[in-house]
Image (tube, rainbow, N blue to C red; front, side, top):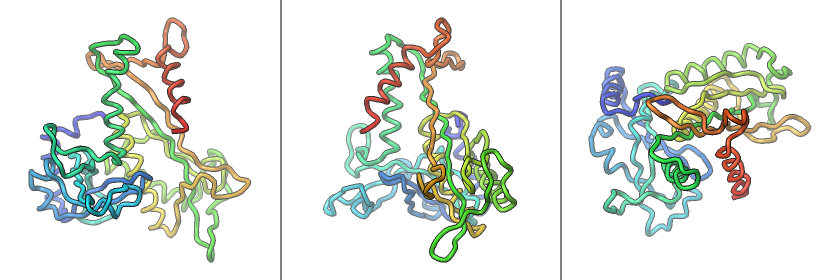
Length: 302
């Protein structure tokens, strides 16, 4: 997640790859405030136009649930991030790019960011880290990174009449049944094709419950990967006649699903990363880590 995949040279290379592979459609993806994946599809020829990364494409914001945009101000722009341009393995001739959302009115810095775009909000929060650290901890003139590694838990189920049945009676770290293994294998293969690095997958505690663990990466990139992975899991479950659910408590009396998220602040000097959450002198959590935990507790409800 920390390579140069966002560089102009690399994007041109990927665009050529998409063209050579016969790509015809590009899905321009964004999320609503509930994390639901939305998209608008354009032709690869439209996407090749250099202005798409400057002026984007129009959408009707008043029709996006939760955006709260009045009809008379409904026009919004989605502008793709070239770093997220990747093939969609389950859709022939289709690639995708994740977008940021903007108001169509321009400022000196460009289009005005849309307040309901959670991706931009996260990017802005990450961008403020050096400022916050220099003010609160007197750490100046350094490069910092906010790294996260989520663990997604979910159930794979089959339909039974108007309800759902579990596909196995396996427990924690048990070998999955053939259907579960086939589905998970295709999910992992698709992750690789879309440039998503994972650490492991395994059976969770409840029957039919599974978990995929990410490797640490830049918070914005991992947020993109998380939304993408949920789509991948649903797509390949459906292809095997299954239903994937991320509901926190689908079955009474059984373990529910969550998404634990490991978090870490790092300082980067000459390409070397230093863990700011660890104090070698104390051999324990650093003051920065303790303040970070305090901030999480303070703002968790919001």
